Length: 317
Image (tube, rainbow, N blue to C red):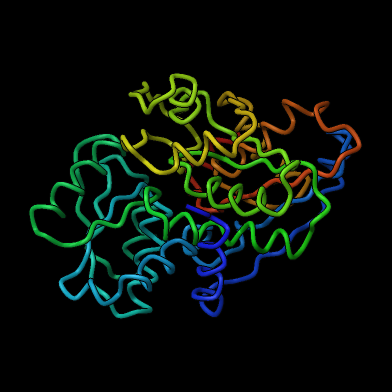
């Protein structure tokens, strides 16, 4: 499967529905990390994250199959994106969320009027349950990441990066289920095989790198993390596992303290509020700051969906 071709199809299909997000040079991070750092601001995307790209691409691709609705599962950003797209396309669906989903993200999903059901389990368990319900009801299940239409939609971030800034040596991207990094890496590596792609994870929830190391998708213990948008397990047989195996050069894990410090850094220096998942690649770059001395580095800021309660907790030093 050639991701770059799927990304080009997605780009044509969703362009009129999404924002082309800017790339911004960061003088503060550049000085700190001894390289030229650029930020891809998916935090400024509609609904506050990159997820709307995959949601539009998937729902547009299978719209004729959704007369009886659909089911998906989400801890926040995917659910919000799917809810927004459903309203735009006049579709009906249900989002299953973990019982402990953050109040801010639950309200954001609910804002667009989609049906929401809570499940008493982790994000991974909620996803498995939602898929079983969809199978029983014989209606489509929209995976947050394990779907080529979703991956291709997220890959349009890579398409934009190549249009905006081709002279880059490395890209830092947060990994959860792997949809975003699979799409970006699959497209950019087609354009520049020497480009380094670094997968960034919270140490408290690092399913992809542990699975890659094991050579197969395995169960991983997940502890609470500020990077709730990337937390959770990977579905066995997920296409993103193979894509990450092929395209990701290195994996970096960061602590909760490092994520917190990066969120504070972005507020103080860049005057940007970002969610924990977007701070993970910032923390990873700072951790590896001597790796790309004098090179051009791009960091994807995946989203801005963070509640005021979390911000208050983060800024309490």
